[in-house]
Length: 178
Image 1 (cartoon, one colour):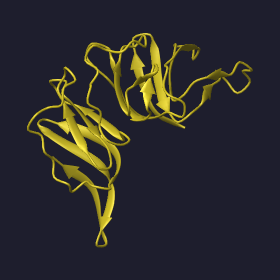
Image 2 (cartoon, rainbow, N blue to C red):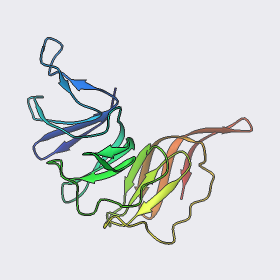
Image 3 (spheres, helix red, strand yellow):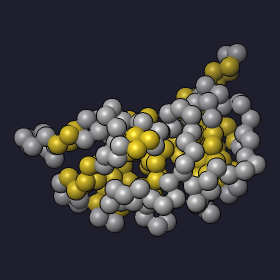
Image 4 (tube, rainbow, N blue to C red):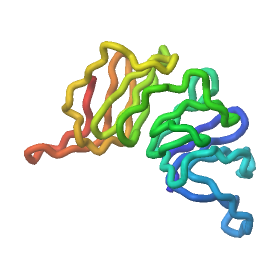
């Protein structure tokens, strides 16, 4: 299953829950890939990102320098612990601003503000990072979103919106603003 496709300078990066890639259904060349690949404009495989086996990529953001912020459910990137969140360059190398402190749990959504601070959203946590990859001080969201089935997160001005669904006492909640 494909969860996210983003345009990069030399093709597209595709993230999801898959174990391999074929250019077409008639293609006999199966390429093993765990959750994250880059294809060129002709849909030929350009790069297989070294995610841990069974990786599920839920969201990808392209930063202003062309690097990729990748969130999902995975334990390593290129054999190094990068649980659930990694910032990489399009060529596959780890970006210098890769966050050292990882969110607890599967990252369901990412959001980036105008200053390139970013948010990693799990079902039990929203963690804000600076553009340099450090955990931002002073951001303490309420626990209203706990156990919400997060689908997307967006930043509008100074506000973070977490979009998903949750039913509490028979009431359906579809968005939270922080």
